[in-house]
Amino acid sequence: MFIPRRRPASGGLRTNANTFSQVWSSGMDELWFLFGFESSEIDMSSRATKQLTRLRSPSAKEAIDCMRRDGAVIFKQLVPVVSIKQALADVQHALEHGYGKYKEGDFFEDRTSRATGLLRLSSSYAHDQLGHRLLRDIADHFLTTRHEERMANGEPYLWETPPQISSCIAFKIDPGAKAQILHRDDSIYHNVHEPITTWTEPRDLSRDSSLSLFVAGTESTADNGATRLIPGSHLLGSNEEPQEKDAIPAELEPGDGLFMLSSVYHGGGANITSERTRIVFASSIIRGILRQEENQFLTVPMETMRKYPENVQRFAGFLQQFPELGWVNSMQDQA
Image (cartoon, rainbow, N blue to C red):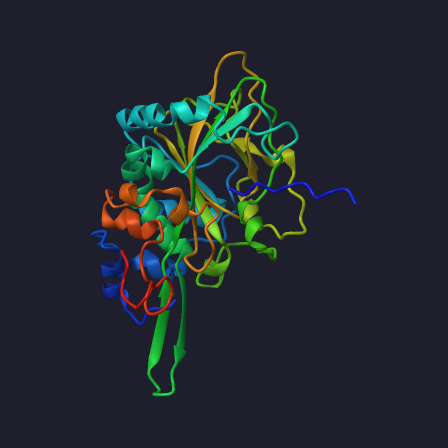
């Protein structure tokens, strides 16, 4: 989630599917979607839907198909409600005491507050949201950066860099908050898009810089500020203006999850209620070759990070991406 400021007035890995699975240490056993060469099995001529698909079974394949077409998909009851309640309790102090409170005129207005550094604040969030297998699997598919080249010895090398966490934020939209302008999250990475008519793989696997998972902490409706988004807008070129009339609210119950590519035009909704606050947990994931929006190495105390399982540590960027990205002192894996 990027937060633009108003301008003043004046890699690599020589690997195959098996070794890549070992890198993640996540028990992954379905690897077909990591390499993304299955477009022949999908009818990509279908146009984006006007309403988002809502899935109930935890299927990465179904989610990826929907995101290719619409740019986003909703999972019902992605996270147990008991975990959501614990995460809300963990971030309540930060949200209520102005942690990251916005000023009038900011990209988020003064009736929106945030709790940042969720890995520092909530182990429940870390385990059940950031550590959710679906998030890792979907991010692996869309955000793994890879290319193949031949070295002087004539052998082909496949270089791969897995995705990593960009930011972990809880947003609270209070009654009276105005709607946020429709925007793309990957603008922060100067990602300029050419218009396309359909998503085609492998061509478009390098199109997005990031993706996000929004998990509802409270009921999220059109009236209390549900995220508005334009299905299919991930296909638009950067010079095509998004139209507010095409945006729909992504209404969620507590524990529901919205997966969304960073090229989708979206924005927080207006909270026109008198007393219903809307809280959402937002996990942004980027390509491993890009800089994190929220610096996890400085945000999360090392003693806290050490308590998390290895897959969460690696997702946060605590790994050496063989052979040379992220090493410290010597080329040894630091996770």
